[in-house]
Length: 164
Image (cartoon, rainbow, N blue to C red; front, side):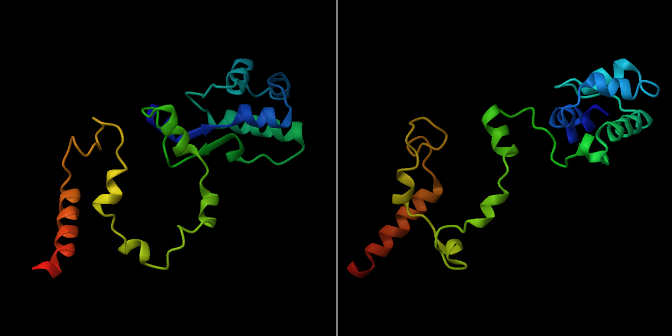
């Protein structure tokens, strides 16, 4: 069950904050149906409930509807995300994974025609400048890459074809 929490986003604290509703107000509104401790625990920022009783969740949603006068959807409070939280990643990697890249669809890759990008293959000259840090996993001097060797050989053979 604990693994399932990686796929859930608990959004009640954000919902309350966005609408200017205090946890105290929610607790007063739901006092007959939900314990005070549960409301305060659920409404605390940074808290993710370990256990969610559906009857209590419905009572909280109905309380929010009474407070806001708006319809409150289940996913306003709790959201399923098919991509689990990656706690094993460093901060930079997590930031990239969580970034909204949907707008990048507007930009076409360079000015290539359909299929041209698939045909492009870098030469060894293109690859030399890619690895500056000596000793890095991509350092050319540290690992004579097969692709690099083949590319250099192919370019050499093509350049000397007419000389034979």
